[in-house]
Image (cartoon, rainbow over all chains, first blue to last red; front, side, top):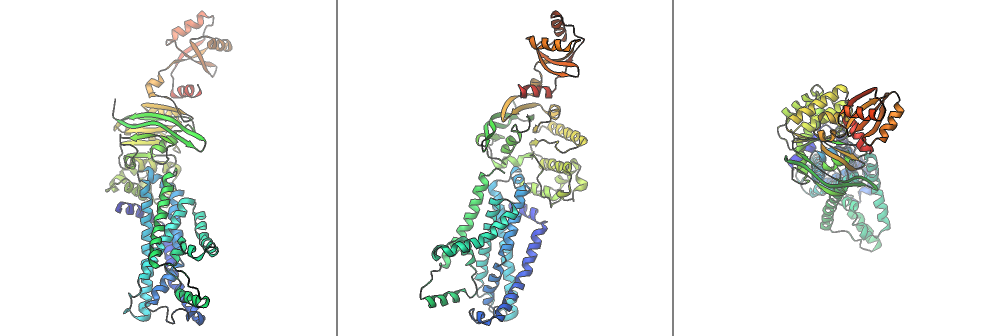
Length: 263
Length: 298
């Protein structure tokens, strides 16, 4: 495990493109949060839906920070695609295997990279939430609702694993990125035509619902009162379990494909 | 018989509807410099890629070091397969660090310096791989193959992209490494290269093994002669009609013939008895190229 991490670190430490993407991610998240805050100030009727409280105050900041950050998961998903497709395009994945790396270690080492990226972005999101929440409301109530950051971490792990599977299947970076991005609207559009209960089980829907719109619950209850029909929503535990099952499935399928494939 | 390093049994590989490798079986023993010969597309690279885990065989099996086809075997094999594959954004040293890590080496900095010096890349150690010329890339691949001092080297067209000086250096390097008692497997279509370094050869065509054995045994088949006469056409007709001689090809006004007669005097007598007096007759040292052409074109 340590050895695989060392191998991946040696490969990635001088890859400038990831550093630039990560820097962009770091800058854009707080900016985006301020923009959303500004947007809701301009539309006070929407803000009323939320909680009536300030976004930047504990514990609301956790919901708000993770929701805002989740917009840019696709950015880090692209990073995962680049890292993976590079190895295929440069034929270094083939060379690694020839040099003695078992194919399962190829998959495990990429899982470790994805885990590290997820930890990194989750930690950064935690930091942004913590600092902003502290500035606006003091640190007294800081850890209330911090479980949202853990859910965000699982969400990123899910998205990045999904991106990895696309990269393994499609092999070409540009195409993989395009397919990965257009899968989002495809699933949403497909979901609109399917019964709500089935759509709830789709992978991206599950990951997206881990960090829902901050005023999502309020919207749902409003809708329920309006129509008089209770909407089915997946229990949180089931959603978490499925989130892990999908991650396992993505990596399992990647391994199966790689095992069968001639490099 | 020496210790068996590699044993291949009935190895087959199909690409869609093309049979790239057809029931190949062979054995390589410790200390051999084993040449895999064949025209382009004869299955040399396919064979090596299967042996190195990059391709899945359709059927058949192989075993390295009597230890099956386990992934860990490859850590003791240095290889250069087709193009050199490295991370273009990393420099020579960083690329070798990745390889060293995969091979499970712990203290590798001294060794990296050693191999980079051996292939004359030490001065360029901090240049990114993408700035290298083809010859430099090839030399980095050799350095990588030698990195953890493996017992076996597998080289696919090792002189590809090298200039004449580089080719000579590569040849000397191979001979030097062979002297250390290492086993080397080389695939090439440059026969001169094979003839100068190999102890054993296998000849492939269209995925089939045509001939295999020690180089000196393969080389000592029928004797070749260069003959010449006033009427070359009449001589050629006679060569073709006689049972003891075979026409091979015409070489600048002389005929290259093969004969079951070992002695030039016997050949001379044979033609004289048939009424043709040779104006030139000399033994022709057979090289691997002529043997190869005979075998492959037969």
